[in-house]
Amino acid sequence: MKRGVRGTWFDFVDDPWKHVGREMEAARFHPDGLLVIEDGIIADFGPFDEVSPRHPDLEVTQIERRLILPGFIDGHIHVPQTRVLGAFGEQLLPWLETWVFPEEMKYADREYAEEGTQRFFDNLLAAGTTTCQAFTTSSPVSTEVFFEEASRRNMRVIGGLTGIDRMGPEEFLNTPEGFYEDSKALIERFHGQGRNLYAITPRFAYGASPELMEACRRLKQEFPDCWVNTHISENPSEFYGVLRLHTDCRDYLGVYEKYDLVGPRFSGGHGVWLSNDEFRRISAHDASLTFCPCSNLFLGSGLFRLGRVTDPAFRIRLSFGTDMGGGNRFSMLSVLDEAYKVGMCNNTLLDGSVDPSREDLAEAERNKLSPYRGFWSVTLGGAEGLYLDDKVGNFMLGKEADFVVLDWEGGPKAAAWHQSLVVGPEGPATMEQAANLLFGMMMVGDDRCVDETWIMGARAYKRTRA
Ligand code: GUN
Ligand code: ZN
Image (tube, rainbow, N blue to C red):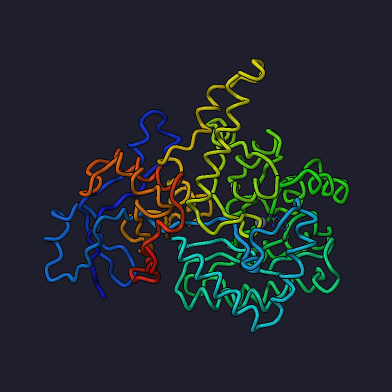
């Protein structure tokens, strides 16, 4: 089946951090563009006047007064925490014990897991997120339900059984052998089926004995094309606990290195307390980190050093994630909002005003999350971070046609008047105007900016409220 969508399109062809001072070179903007989709795949794209003569008799849907971007990519999110987002008062370890493990235990029950997982995907789509890399629970049932529901919605996802064999309630824990067997069965059943991809998922080194880590190594050796997803160096109490448990490892990253897990398609969530040496090694492995600012602030974990990991001398692949429910939002627009503020706080130290010996203006410049850097990070950049950029992330021909239709006047009452500083009723005519609208959405808007979400060329979500 072939169809066209006509509207105002914005995507990226390169990394804006590589174009300091000239970030527009990394983006594409078509104020009146046409995307042609055949069987869910992008078959043609460009200015309407150029593309449409190549497709006579095309059935075209016209979308007016909206900015259309590639679907957002959430690199780190927890399906079974959909109900506990915004839980009061704790930092990571007591938060897990008090709120998270009791809720996640319910997902061993298929009926509860199905309800929670449907709500999870409804929320993702309402936030404009079309791809996620997700944690499930230690129960295979929750993982099966995740892949089944993603398949029903035809969404590109990465996920995996989330292994923990210590530091949790007894009935919630895996055994290393059980984790190996269950993971293997799930990989054989779901990995590469439709749009499903499997991540071998040790929850975190703090909750993993050497035997569980050994099971992960074995799985990665037997299924080398699987992803690996975990947490890394999120919180000081967690990080010191890891060093006490894995005494032969020099630092947090060293645990995952010891078990041969760090390389392409490895993602470590958070990385707030990583050393410069760990950053260098992650870069050399071509592995990836996920920046989760809503969570890092909500749980008080700390300020991720965005300007450090984007240093061209040891650049690290990045995706951005909500970490919902450690993050208190489903919206990647909210992630950009908080990420911008983290960069600004980092810069209070780096601009030399507090301590001139710590001044680093180049790093400070990289901390500034412009709309180009921000929206690249949640689209093409996120796809590169997750090694999915051959499939999603922008409107290159041959990629899967997932996109989000944004209303720049959506959000709080203040939004429309604010955005009228940038454009009139006719909408953006230049890339610069479009980028200013995007910055307005990330700082003033929220998921109410998401008007429609499309999966493989079919509309999967339409906003009902204005
Ligand atoms: N580390 C281990 N499990 C979790 C979790 O569920 N959320 C966060 N933020 N960190 C973790
Ligand atoms: Zn997490």
